[in-house]
Amino acid sequence: MEWDWNFVWEIMPTLIEGVKITILATLLGSVLAAIVGLAIALARRSPNKGLSRSVGFLAEFIRGTPLLVQLYFIFYVLPDIGILLPPLVAGVIGLGLHYGTYTAEVYRAGIDNVPRGQWEAAKACNLNARQTWTHIIMPQAIPPMIPALANYFIAMFKETPLLSAITVLELMNQAKSVANTYYRYVEPMTLVGAFFLVISLFSVVLLRWLERRYGRIEK
Amino acid sequence: MTQWSGYFGLILQGALVTIELTLMGSVLALIMAFLAGLGRLSRFFAIRALATAYIEFFRGTSIFVQLFWAYFVLPFVGISLTPLQAGVLALGLNVGAYGAEVVRGAIQSIGREQYEACIAVNLGRWQAMRHVILPQALLVMLPTFGNNAIELLKATAVVSLISLTDLTFQAQVVRSQTGNTLVPFTTILVIYFTLALIISWGVRSLERRMARGLDGVRV
Image (cartoon, rainbow over all chains, first blue to last red; front, side):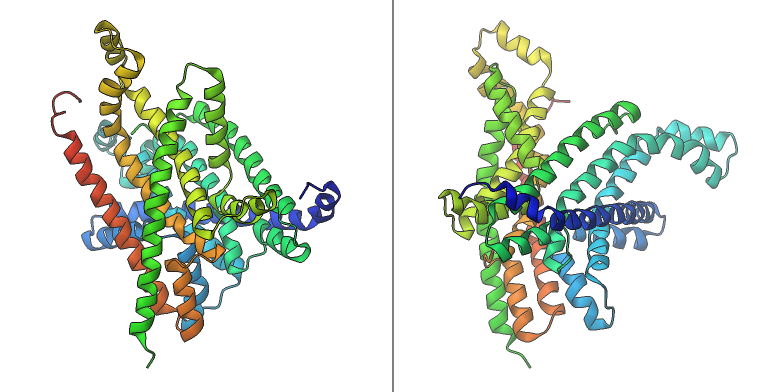
């Protein structure tokens, strides 16, 4: 079966509708992941052993299980206990929670990488906890985190096709429905692949730039 | 009451398929990782370019798209794969591309003096790699390979979407037959997590084994 450019132009508007949802889901998911990750990282540093252990275990659990199953869980189980979510919201929550457990590690590494001497110096200068965080620790911890966070957001972007499994009409789902209607898989599937490849190649350039600009977290 | 024992058997069958996929995918991924990882360090431009193209392509497009491509598009060019073959192929090639970067990074992390020592004792390129560089690099790769294997295990959930009867697929069957959502999805989440724990435990003990005899050699 050969490649048909007319068919490509015919399905393009439908695919672009899907691209919009894909990008929206990625953006919302990234914001949620950034917040969830910070919450997890802070909870794990908490002096309350019960809190830090249980959050730690929960994060391990989410990181050790497939995103697809978590999406199913949110989409199918929550309605049974009365929480009915639109597919896109369920998808964004799934992405945000799953990647939040990864970004938590980035925050942890970033904070741990600030030398002990900085904490001691802040104490010596009689700064209180809030001042220490806002003036000493965060300005040093955040820049190296940026490339690592961006890396996970790109990874999340590549996982958005999973949302099609819970009926979100993103790019993959649009491509599948087009393919099933015309029974032509070559063009839609290849276009989806090409789209992700192009964005990923651009994002590699962006990442290199971020790493040059902000440095990277040394392990 | 529903007949849970029968459904539990179904889920166990799914677990076997998931384990089978994970093992076969890991073997393929390991082979591809070494081929492409060493290929990127080759003296010959053509091999380097080929390895780089493979790595960027499979890291750039998501596993889901690759799987659909292998399953739906390849038949049109005359290659028909069973769902299992498509699954192993997509998983192995995808994770192999990530593994290749681990192989490359680990080999490059071995100090220059090791290479110089190899030249000093007149080892050929292959001998140096086989007897000096790889034994040390393998230990550096191992923890990341463990993480990659867990990523592969999680990615296997995606094959349920091309109707391979793995854990996730069976959970969907149980859901549609019993209408119960909490039990099947919680069960498979726990099974996935247990499998992930087994992998990370296995890799850790392997690491301890391999590190034996290297104490004092590596910092």
